[in-house]
Amino acid sequence: MTTIVKAANAAQFLSLVPHLLGFTPSRSLVLVPFDGDRSLGAMRFDLPAASPDAPPDTIDRIASTVIGMVCRLPAATAIAAVAYTDATFDAGAAMPHQDLLRALERRADSCGLRITDMICVASDAWGSLFDSERPGEARPLAEINPHLDAEVGPAPVGNQTAGADLPPVDSAQQEHVAEAIVSLKHLVALLSGAPDGEAEADSTQRINPQTIAAAYTLDDIPALLEESLTWDLADLAPYDVALVGWCLARPSMRDVALVQWSGQFDDGDEALDAQLRWETGEEYPPDLAMRMWGEGERPEPGRLNAGLELSRRIAATVPRDMRPGPLSMCAWLSWALGRSSHAEVYASMACEIEPEHGLSEIVLSFVSAGHLPEWAFTSTPRPS
Image 1 (cartoon, rainbow, N blue to C red):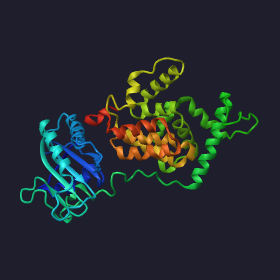
Image 2 (tube, helix red, strand yellow):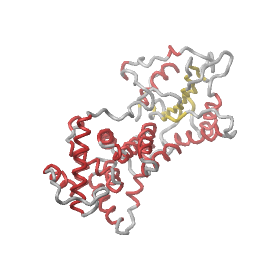
Image 3 (cartoon, rainbow, N blue to C red):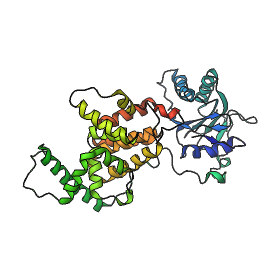
Image 4 (cartoon, helix red, strand yellow):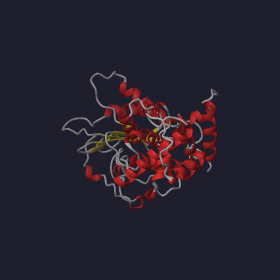
């Protein structure tokens, strides 16, 4: 995202930061890279907690890591840094997190990045190290007006984790979906000759005609996954939720959805074929595998968002034991969209249900390491 930032002073700039992020950060370090007077979006990191046991070079290593991410943006020529903290400007004390801000300043300077401002927003005041009149001194929070610029609309509500809750779902809908899933699992087990849970599939049990019709959809999973991106989430049929939930609960089919929703329909066909060949001992194509790690062309954000909202609805609707699959998709899609805080929430929810859940643990490792997808540092999406 590239935005022209029109701020006459630091207070006005702080008023615009939540609009760049889409939320009001807390306990965060925010870097806003610039190409001239145009912002290149904003990067949020967890604010490092003070620890007496931390190695002396901890702050410098953090500064090197985050400035290194800015340097991956080819157009970045300058940055502004803001520390949002619960700490206070105590009487006679220095501005909180000056050590981190100064470390960022040193590292940015060594990388040839111009510094436009270094600010701390504390719980009782704010201050700027670049304040020409009162450098590093406390100023009233009331000077920061998130509604200052009518052109950017109302201030975002909530911090970086806001919006990660699963959508509310009617209990009757959950019951209908659970019934559809049981029936679907039974039919699939019967057709494949595989066990249905702990028992063999009962061939004498009556099959709901709706289940039979739904099962035919599984003959072309990429077509199902593609159509699902267009569904009205406010009016999902139980068997629609059951079908996609059944796919996302299976790692092989979930990975097909990951490749397809972050690519195009043909990518899903290729991923399904590759999955079938991999199960017979062939090597999985590297160009498909690299997508999970965030490498390759930048996905179309609209497809990622559509997949995320669908996965959120499915995770909220299916029985608890089936939720880790769709939750892991929520986590990966959030990460792919640059929403690492949300990704961590969803992946943690999945691991609470199923410890050591594969994709969820991968996403948690990404977030912990501060790893972002390669396309986060590019501005042109792949053609749709």
